[in-house]
Length: 346
Image (cartoon, rainbow, N blue to C red; front, side, top):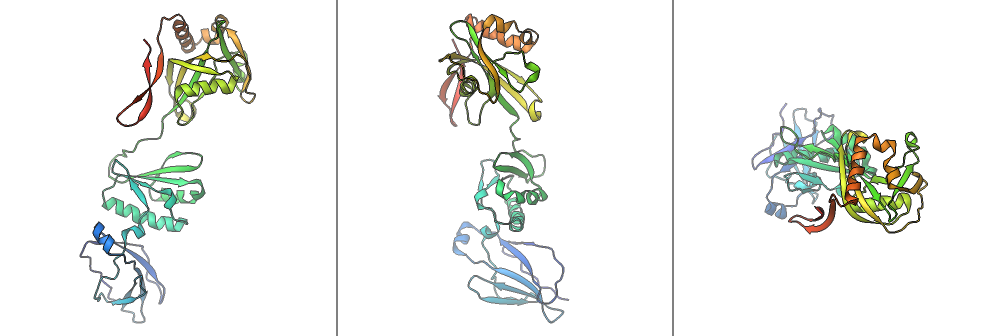
């Protein structure tokens, strides 16, 4: 049985979906791609669909092309008189932006509507990105398109991180180890050391830590996304105790590993100046809050018996005696972006 042979000159590549020979009139699609310059893409805007069918003659395979103007050409046993299938590369590619590291970031707003369509176009997109020498591929899938996740995983994508509204997956094209940056490895917490004019420190008892029922601690919490450390300390104190404060400086920080979800943890102790005195407890998280004399706070067994907490309080007391300088915030401009930096007090 003779087969239709396609001329592969003029740098034609094709991606074929594997299928067995079908009965008469059953059709299987083949998608074709051609490398074209930007000028050629402007000049040529032909989209063609190809159908293979077994003709009544058992020894003949027919290739039918239909272009956007509705005209058809029949190619039998490899005989044809033109290249009617020239198609736009963009018709079979996911919309994506190039990143500065030689990779691509797929635009989530331009994803197909169905998982089947996504599977087909994802395969062809990966095929072309490999030919183009691309490296990393970033795929952000919105929550309402979660059915695309197994499709991407089947093609070799790996989980990177997840937020409330999306899941990020990545694909590394070159041979060798993946060079894409890993997901965030740390969580960042803050604690507020607030001392009033009567030498009393603002302390709280947390509602959900039953093993520390008799322990009075500093107000603490996690900073929010895109929140500065000093703003986070002021906010946490306000939320837990109702006390308004002003950031003075970062006194100390500690760094530990394998905490929540195996993440590392950074915890910053900030010295804050109280701007109000009336305590209003956050009843969802805090059991009680009060102003406690500093000496009484330091004498607590939980502080004296814990080397880390004792060291932190010793640093706080040293700062009160002007024997130590912490870090204050300064706004500076860098070559890349505007950011907040800390500088040691003099």
